[in-house]
Amino acid sequence: MISILIKSAKKFTLEEERIRSWASNSLKKHGLANGELSLFFVDSKEIQVLNRRYRKLDQATSVLTFFQGQAYPESIRRATPEKTLLLGDIVICPVEAKKKNLSIEFLIEHGIKNLLSEIPTAKSLRPGSS
Image 1 (cartoon, helix red, strand yellow):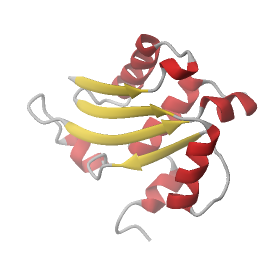
Image 2: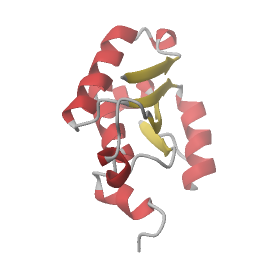
Image 3: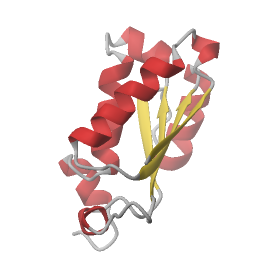
């Protein structure tokens, strides 16, 4: 089962069911049928604080991802209906997304790819990678 926690979407007049559907479909497309994912929607100031704290970049961005340490290819292959993988958190700033003409659906997909280590920059952040 896929579990998706959504926080503060209504603050930005985003439809939670549509967001849940995009995330669920993306996870299934990547072969994951049993996982837990959190999606947070924040304003420009809040994402800038997070970006400064965790990436040392003092600027707002459209999306950040935070691994929970289980979303690696070897653990995904071992996923079973009895074992839920904690994938991580995706933080999206709808204001910054709009400035860059990026859809929320695109940013959810981008965040999921980061969590699943399918983007080269995400692979380089994994423990033990050179």
